[in-house]
Image 1: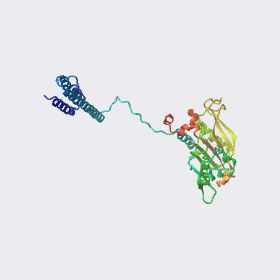
Image 2: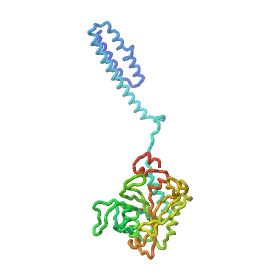
Image 3: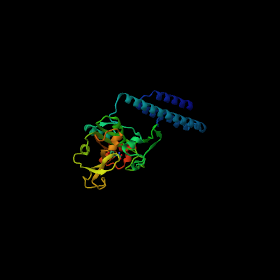
Image 4: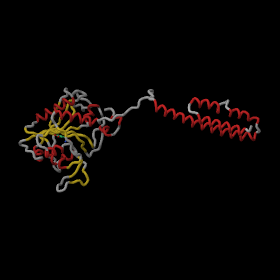
Amino acid sequence: MDIKKQLNDVRNQALKELDDIKENTDIERWRVRYMGKKSQLAEIMRGLSDVPIEMRKTIGATSNAMKAELETALIAKEQEIKNLELAKSAEDAIDVTLPGRIQHQGHIHPVTQAIEEICGIFEGLGFQIVEGNEVEWDHYNFDALNIPKEHPARDTMDTFWMKGGSKPETDWKMLLRTHTSPMQARTMESTPLPIRIVVPGRVYRYEATDATHLAMFTQIEGLAVDEGITFADLKGTLNEFVKRFYGPDRKVRFRTDFFPFVEPGAEIAVSCAICGGEGCRVCGNSGWIEISGCGMVHPSVLEMAGIDSTKYSGFAFGLGIERIPMLRYGIEDVRNYYSGDLRFLRQF
Ligand code: DAH
């Protein structure tokens, strides 16, 4: 018989059978039959020695091409069966041996956690939570807080000024608030007494960033105004806050400090939790960690807001938030908070 025809018949037969195959075990059988050492193809090739040399060449080429064709068809078939099996197992079975997929769950940012905890404590003490604007007039950020133009205290808060922002018929200029204190002035101006508020929010300083400084950070402002409020109320409130937030064993220290919008002004520190007041790296060997500025609302600030300073008095305080989880968890670089690095954030 014509060898070429023989080859062609084998090829056609092989492809037809392959086409009908639906399972892996049949593939193996097919491979042995058509591509193995005892396959028809191999047999035909062995018979080639009887064929004249010229013909042998062309038949050799044909059979090689055929082998390649069968191999390609085989690979395609194997893939087809694999896909079929995958689809089938996905359809009707859960592979309990597969490792589970981690479901990443979002959670509250550490700074927001601190805000919520602190605001919760002040709510428990009868304070209301209000939020102000991050874009603010210099009037509320400075003037209404007893920091007039040219006052040196303005230099301590490098300011982002908004281009072209000014209020018609005034000399007010627009800025990104440098502290949450402007909400003191706004609230006193617009809210009936008595006032007890805390104001969490972002503030901005035109500063170079480093491990302890950010151009954007977070504060919580506190304000209480009523008849007969004294420094003892300020101390009592902040003592209570420290006990509830930092724990009953922490000591509180008040020292005089200056802020234009309070008189007298003070700085509050709590005893260092790391060394218990002995002095360590975290507290800069002082045994104390400063947490807040505070004081009695300056009479001029009350008067500017339309409050009779002979009848009413108030206290105010301002806490920086980023420092709090830093001290609690030993975070060494404040820039971590806002880098968006999930490896950092997932720890809290
Ligand atoms: N606003 C001040 C600052 O950002 C902090 C501050 C000090 C707020 C004393 C107060 C206060 O309410 O009484 O540096």
